[in-house]
Length: 369
Image (cartoon, rainbow, N blue to C red; front, side, top):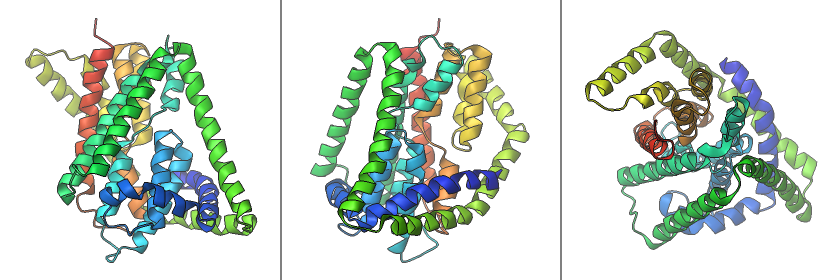
């Protein structure tokens, strides 16, 4: 299974690292680094000013927010390699790596195209009705991730540039929520897919046009980066195999079912509504396995209905965070990091925040009748 996943990544990595090489050689990455430096210089104080890693991180965050998973992962791996170049202790994660990985693992995604597509397949009356709850939940988990890492790394959150950045982010998210709220329900999914596809196409064309303008040998530069993609895919195979075996053992052991039954008993004993408990398998599986959590989400919609509270909550939970241990295995595995320091504790705190937000927000948007 780990080999199959890595094999599937090979083509994507080769394509996007080839394009990234063009962007790097043309100076586009350095331009992004200068643009992001006022904020990233505060969140990532260990990255030298105007270092290309800042530009690559900026591109990765942008791709993640837009739901462009195929682009985000290769760009993120490239960022990790650049961060490793300035790492003095090659087997230990730096503060910049930990901040980068935690924001990645928090899974801030503006356009959850895949989830809306699955809801449509399962016959949801309005597949996009989870759009705003997912946006709120994932925004909260990302905010928790940044705050947790800043507290551990003693980064001052009240610096002017960070206050301005978070204020702009709140305004942007709020404006986007209003836009999709006023759109007709049937248009949300259509416009989301259209915007994502147009952006993806524009990014690829933009990279190529900038390379041509700089008079690069596009073909040779692309091949050079594509080779790096193939080597990266090979490097992560052992780490993927290890994490997927561990997840398989956990699922087969029955520990998850035992945990769910215990929580259900406790919630009922406390006299609280236990409707959310049936969606917990998706929440608990999400940090471990993206495909496993997706399977749990689909099973919830199949069992309870796409428009049921459990079905909707499972979708919101699926979109609220990313897969922590998979991200750690792939991103750290590609550069040989063994000492992850406070990466996983901070990521789990963000995941917990996202899960709690998903449950509370789902109760607000989809009251249990």
